[in-house]
Length: 340
Ligand SMILES: [Fe+2]
Ligand SMILES: [Fe+2]
Image: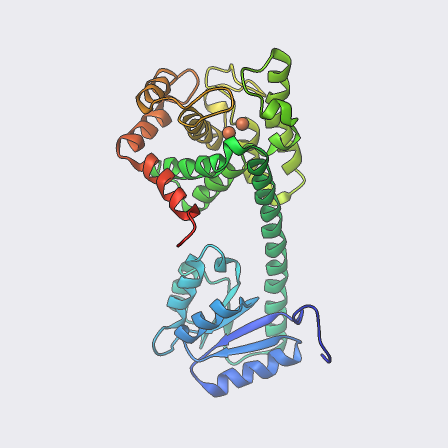
């Protein structure tokens, strides 16, 4: 490429990690021909530094290396919530089944066998890079929804940080339920997005001080279906739709918008409903000041089995007793507080 450019090179960046220089150069030669931008690292430690400086689109990883071996590096990359989307290919010397199993366990996306076959290298890298592009777009869609959720917060000064806390509380409940990391992520982000539909609620209703009239309440309640309508076209938002649409359902079937009852209400929505109500109770709102903690607690207990899922309420009350809920809220403020 010649001359200045507004954007960095669009060539996919491939990071080659191998302690043997000849191997790196051989791979670089192949990859260069295939049109990739190549970076080289001599071991896992160097690779981590490079990844931190510039996220590659693909990592080709030797297994036996000094300082940090390929399996450990792979595991480290796959444990990172952002980096885990970068495809990792482990280079194995031969059909070593035990190593492959260890690699799969560490989250490797594919394997290459030495000596390299140029045609095979092309096929493997191409399909992984295509997935990578797709992942990037999925990620971008999630980003759009998160940005929208921030818009709602900005419109409504009373709910600043409310959505964030609902996400954090939901995550803690999920953790206590023993859910997997991917589910905890859905609970957190779903919580942050739960009131997405409020973006279409007129400000005079959203910010009204004093109780809403029946008509205003009806309009307010459309935020649940409106939120899912807004998020629906974004494919990666599918996993958040249950929270967005159903966080105002009640286990006795008297909630909205679909009057679902008991376990018909998706688990994520039953969880978010509790964090949402708790946070609303203990915060000042345009129409009333915050409740005392004990008063909020007794309301939460009283609504177990009618408004909320009794088993999840029991877990949530334990989290309150163990100070987890308040710690999460405090820590959130610490993050928000400007340093110095
Ligand atoms: Fe809501
Ligand atoms: Fe809410």
